[in-house]
Amino acid sequence: MRAAHRSVLGIAAAIEAVTGLLLLTVPHLMAKLLFAVDVSGVAIVIGRVAGIALLALGVGCWFGRRDASGGWALMAMLLYNVLVTLYLAFVALGTEFVGVLLWPAVVVHAVLTIILGSAWSKSC
Image (cartoon, rainbow, N blue to C red):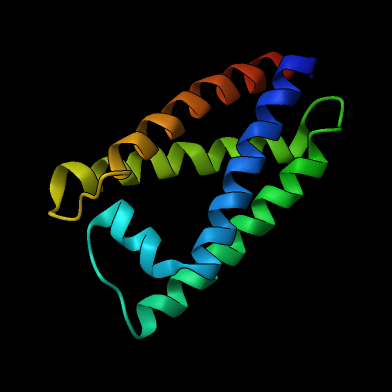
């Protein structure tokens, strides 16, 4: 994997790790910014579990970026970004749950999908 693609994987990993930490520590704020809703009860628990998962993905991909081809770390981050782009766009277009950061999140994930997809296609 080229150094530029390693950097993109590192940036994506850092973004997801930070997002995971935010979901873990302030799920109320993240729900408000992304979906314009107040959360309570089990929604907070689910948000924190999602935060743990994103933190794990970010940390795993951060260390996985050192692999010459990007390997599983690159594929995991690419798959995550494809799916989250599609799902967040679906939420933004088809529901009332649209906070100030939802469309920027869709755009960031779409751009990461394109860049990571390019890196993956060159590593095959």
